[in-house]
Image (cartoon, rainbow, N blue to C red; front, side):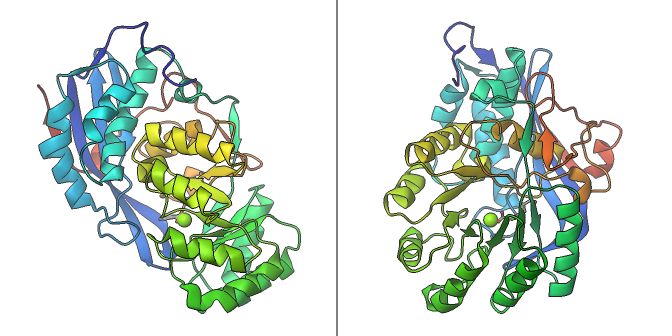
Amino acid sequence: MPDTHSDTRPPLTIDSAELRLVRLPLLTPFVISTGTMYERVFPLLILRSGAHEGYAEGVMDPFPDYLGETIPAAMALLRELFLPMIVGKSFANPAALQDLLTPWRGHQMTKATVEMAFRDLWAKSLNLPLGTLLGGSGDSVEVGVSLGIGSIDDTVKRVAEHHAQGYKRIKLKTRPGHDVDLVAAVREAFPDIRLSVDANACYSLADTPMLRKLDAFDLDYIEQPLAWDDIQDHATLQKRIRTPICLDECINSVQACRQALQADAARVINVKVARSGGYGAALRIHDLCAAFDVPVWCGGMLESGIGRAHNIHLSTLPNFSKPGDTSSASRYFARDIIREKLETRDGRMPVPRGAGIGVHLDHDFLPEATISTEAFAP
Ligand code: OSB
Ligand code: MG
């Protein structure tokens, strides 16, 4: 149960904060329907209380191409609004901190960065693994991979490699004109694997005939086929296709999730804490989906080890019954900013041990990856 310790311990004071902008080159460019990513640039937030440090990374993009948030806006909000509001303050529990951020409109990912770092700090102050505190269990989680857009031949090769490594599900990114033939080729080569596609919102209802053709390939689900902000059209589409729709971009709040489930716009939900606005919302989305008998899985945003560790802990909750996207960090980066190696074995990712997210910053490498550092004190 979340926050069971909240009333039996003194409030936690945030003594200071550090905001870094970090840059990690990607080993291979990641291509999706909205564009190509060559590197991850992200805000890294460190919150301190006594001897403890809590960590989180922002997953917003340089430009608003996945959702509306951007790195420059996030940095400005953290610097000028959110961090001055919380540094030097005491909070009875993570919900108390969330309450302070909730009245500000939008900016889910930026608010989540603050709340996630505080959850890590909170868990460390209780000397509990974050997953345990969230209500999860187990020492590893099932994962798949998300494969960026490439030629059909190359994609079939990458599917073979990752299938051989034991990944439990392969997700193929599609875009208009690179969909039915791609899925047909992969399905022909691998008749029995668990397969899904992710359109990142590149189709419209006018593409229904093509989307209906995908029903022939026994996909686990089609992720976010239609517009990033249109639950209604997904409900219409779900009536016309057999393959379950999984929503990603659309689920930016508990309310959006409830509306999607009530409208039968999604039969699977991709949970991303940052997109939901923090763990408070992500946990309620998890529970709401369970009540609707809708399975969830944990999405990814090409995170460094910090965000990856958060994702792994979240994935230990009971309704995460489909493999997530948190694959080995070595697929993305030559060197990570944490000391631990987050690597899968037979399609399972071990949960980092220890308090909080259970991983530690690599201070030998972090300076090299850091673009800027700002300190915040009361
Ligand atoms: O839609 O899930 C998505 C990466 C960047 C932006 C959006 C998405 C993704 C992924 C990659 O699918 C997941 C990962 O490997 O971290
Ligand atoms: Mg997606």
